[in-house]
Image (cartoon, rainbow, N blue to C red; front, side, top):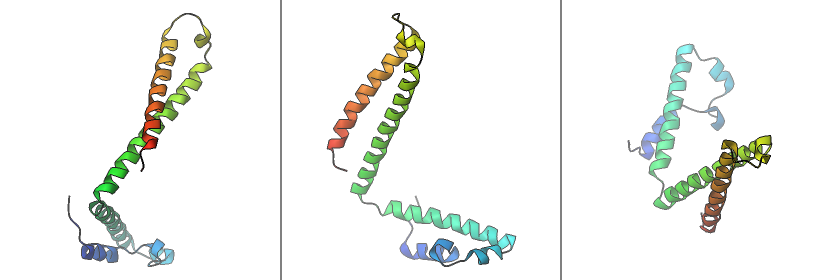
Length: 130
């Protein structure tokens, strides 16, 4: 990890002005030569990476912990959505209604068990303040 100072960040920002900041117009970009445009694009990418790195190195431990918790929460909710979708698909299959135990029914029951566990875990997570 490279430590970026505020001065270095300002220098990088000056090399790649952005249209969103009003420092460069679309007309100016369209009038750039291919070489100038390629250089500007390269500097713009360097700028975005440097800004991201600067933000990352200036985060407090609480912000990092908060971010980790939010990522875990998002992973759990995404998995719940995925399982609920699979359950909806399986419910529409006629083999689920059969009284016999089959592979499809076993999969369906496994999804229900996993969903119940995830939702229980999600309730516990929601009690923690983010």
